[in-house]
Length: 169
Image 1 (spheres, one colour):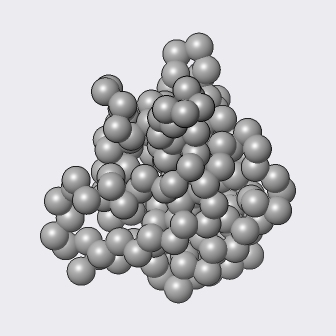
Image 2: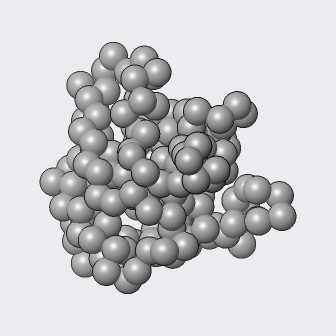
């Protein structure tokens, strides 16, 4: 059995339409609904809901909390997937990479998210989540971003806002 710790932090992947407000908001986590649609017979996913906020509103304390949980799992030999908003995912990934530098870990930490919320037609949430879970089986230790069929070491990637994708720097 392949064990993965899935840490949720919010972002577009977790947003849902709130009719009363007429907007997409981070209200209640959606990741368990995503996981329920996947066939993962040889993978056990443990979900930890750390927060549910747009990454533009994340603080240094939020990033430190995410890093603490990621390091705890990674140093225990459990691969980590983190769902995160795309606007500051690279920044958070770099905080995690810095925290892992002085630790012994032999597993990957993979961040992902979505450009379109889960549940909205054309969402990339399931694709990115699936690819991230697979990446935990294939990648060496380190911190990565998995998105739209690509995997980037966290220090080599940036968001291309104009084209709604990530690219190598």
